[in-house]
Amino acid sequence: MMMSLGMFVFSLETLAYQEFQRQTDWRHGSTSRIGTNPARQYLGRGDDSITLPGVLLPGLVGSPLSLDTLRMMADTGKAWPLIEGTGKLYGIWVIESISETRTIFFRDGAARRIEFTIKLVRIDDGRVDLLGSLTGTVGNVLRGVL
Image (tube, rainbow, N blue to C red; front, side):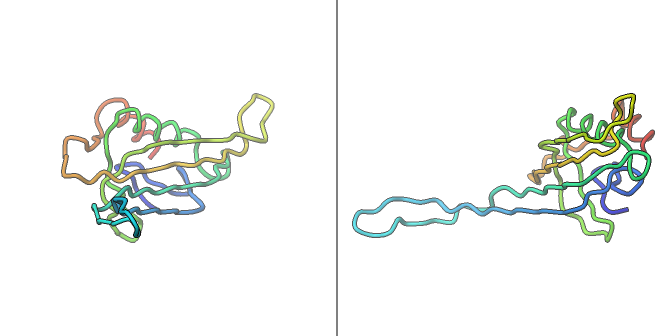
């Protein structure tokens, strides 16, 4: 297991990312002043985002159903705990976007190569009601993929 988002496990069998890119911002407000530099005030932590680019090679590594599963998870609007395979807990995250590019096709139109990018945004604000669950359609799809 490379990492899990909720009950979705990133691995060679499901979806393996090639990079883990994280960006954390901090906010500093600015007020203009006459004759000197603007005054700055620390306003707190800003956005925290993770980008996971990778390549899916159906038949060799991963399953195209994994991207569909993540899209269904995103459609719920719920947040999910993100846990690295080492046990490190990153917090609670939502799926902000998924993009994919399909190339090198079989005769039936199925892609041999799918490049993807998944963007996650941290939302830890204590709202437990935003956490996703394994009930309903998403749970059934997850059980099938896992």
